Structure formats: structure tokens, C-alpha cells
Image (cartoon, rainbow over all chains, first blue to last red; front, side, top):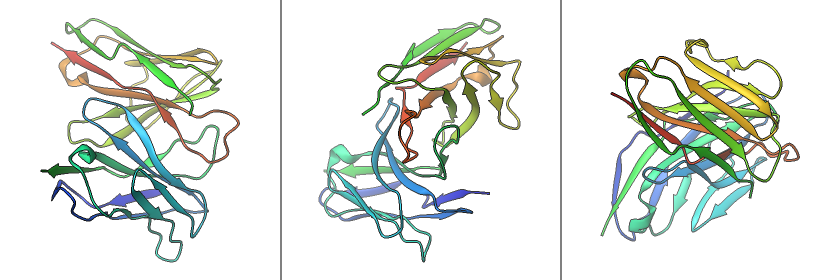
Length: 113
Length: 117
């Protein structure tokens, strides 16, 4: 079956540090890949997505590239801010309509000033 | 983007009572909605797939008689936690996907935090 594995946290970084959160996946077909972010006490928000191999998703300074050869979708940001402190979830979907997303376990990021 | 709204955002109830959580798609129709439960260590567990006009599909290990799901219209799904106990305390999140999208992304509600005393 499909699965997502992401690096375990928590991750603590100083402001302006470089961020990488690793994510690898297992899928039977050609999934779409997502990063969602959850701020404290809130639901999940879509951060970025990529729907096919070699696509790069980007938003708010975050980037992730869909690498089919390594089945990876690592999240990166060049310079994190305190406001980036949140839980980040990697997810995949192999369809639309009635197929749910498969999530990784989430990685908590804390950025300190 | 599409908007999904949940109500209430938090609720406290006594053990043995039932609690209903509503999930609405505000600007699109959703024949399918998904209910997730989030545990303290942050992982998300898919509880069930809610199908408009038919029975929900529950994941293995989720008690269908305890977590009643009703999807009576194309914009509303409800989750009722029946005879709630402290171990049901959790953060429940619903999600839906606009029918016209083919990219697979889900839009999530704000979540509902349930505390059972």
C-alpha cells in the first residue's frame, strides 16, 4: 500500500537557519505530493504541491521537488523565521474524488530568535 | 481556494454524553468528505470516508457505532461521538476535495477539539 515517511522531530533551529525536512514515499502509481502546515490550535493548510515528476512546488519561501528516482519530496527553506514554527506534514494522493490523503507522521519545527 | 468550516472549534462534555461536530464545504459541493483524528503526538489517523447519500466507510479499528457519520447533503457532513469517554478526547479534523480538481489536494476544516470530562 501507499505510505509516507518523514523525518522525526522535533526540529529546533535558530532564525535565518536553513531548513530541510526529509520525506520519502511508497506508491503503486504516480501520486501527487503535498506539504501541509499546521499552526498551533489550527487545522491543516496546504503549503505546496507537485503533481508529477521533476515538478517543484514553492510557497512562502518553501520549496520541494518531486523526485521520482529517489521517491522523495524533501521540504526546504533557505532562511526560517520564528513564524514558521509549526508542524509540517508530507502527504500523497493517487487520485481525486473519494481517495483520502496518506500522511506522514508530521515534523514539529520550532524556530527560536 | 476552497473553504471547509467546522463547528464547534472546541467542546467540553461530560462522560456518557454525545457530541456532534459539523463539517461544511462553504463554496463547493463535496460528495465525499474525510474525517481524521489527531493524537497528542501529532499524527493524523483517517477515521472514515463520508459519502453523500450513503453509508460512511470506516477504517479498520474505528467503531462505527461510536463515531456516527452522516452526510445528508453535498455541503454538510456530521460526526457524532456517542457516549463519549475521556479516551475520545482528541482533535477531530474534516476535509473535502472540490469535485472539479484533479490534483488530489484536500482542504481542511479548522478542527474541533473535544475534551471529555
